Length: 193
Image (cartoon, rainbow, N blue to C red; front, side):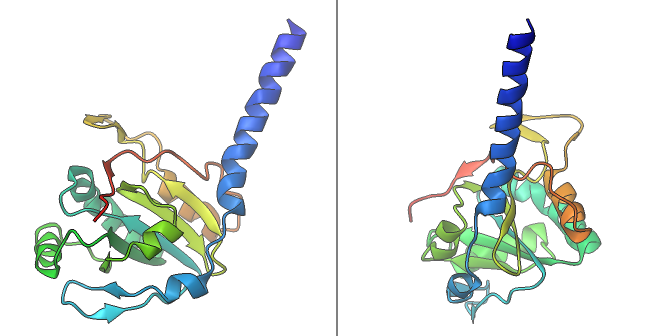
């Protein structure tokens, strides 16, 4: 019995350390991020400027979860005072479609098209909505779900019990270790266009 308990505890510790170490070891050089050409909803080219903490939210104008999470992300933008960027990966959406999405859902953070998907690939993004929190050195501090409201496609909790991004932001701002540094995102696959 003690041997089984010891083995289970060792496996749990290993799992937790792997979960924490992935994001803490991942690094995305700002030189690579800032060189990516992004387009706003008016067709203007823009580049990223690193700040102390940066949140990238991968979005799709057609994804229901992306639409539903705009309100949650807007609240985080207001309370966190860090740089937020909505990133629409690929060339599937025009600036007119992005303008309609912005008009309909009113994000208070910049939403930019990553037509080449260089930024998305550099962040290892695969799902919308997916969030990635990085620091000024390009260290990935957290990636995955915004919270645990959506736990599977088409399935949502009545009450959110885990606020992953909010917790990661709070801990990062106060210099504490982020307890959950990676979760598996739920949503729409990023298209190949």
